[in-house]
Length: 286
Image (cartoon, rainbow, N blue to C red; front, side, top):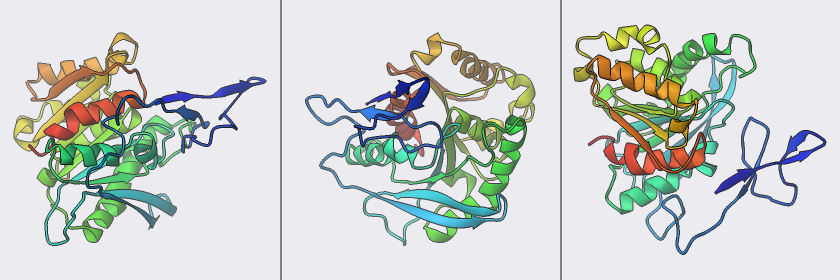
């Protein structure tokens, strides 16, 4: 899957002759899909498929209507308790990007059919709670979204579905900015989450920004699975600085975690699909 756009008089636009365009809050782009000899791991295959449901709810935190997507695995039963992965997008992404670009529902379907992952719910909230161009975006976004998670997102999912309502039954993961949400919010919310997937994210000053988490003497008992991953091309670029710094800080404090570099992609969907399928999802809830 290739992403591209056209430049017309210096203005970035989607290809008007290609109806396959990204649904995103950022300037739109088009996609070109080149199929191989058979379906890819992120394609729809002849396997049982789960459902993706779109929820609309009112948020008192952001004072407006918001959306939330929830994937339920094939054969979902209301009388069975399921763990929940809260999956977040990057800066400017919409929840639908994890479905249309990330293909997370097809990835999960295929992993389940291959018996490589545990059945789970995947909740994809809108973590864009303040405009990315706001001068205080980095200062405000984490507190606002943590409140949104606690007051609206998690309660809605727990009320609407049959979930394991404990930290051991919840995971939070995200790409880029969503990875930083997962890290900065998740690591200080051990009463809610015990599993984490930090994709293409980290912090160059992790020793300061994550001081409480890093110095918690019981952190390894509170965390079931902590994954930090990035693409091969990312590791060869400036994106590596934050991921590597997080990995180093966790290592220096003897915090158990799974650090992985893989795939052939950079800071793009080919990397995030790869990280989910080949490493994070198969190891989650194991």
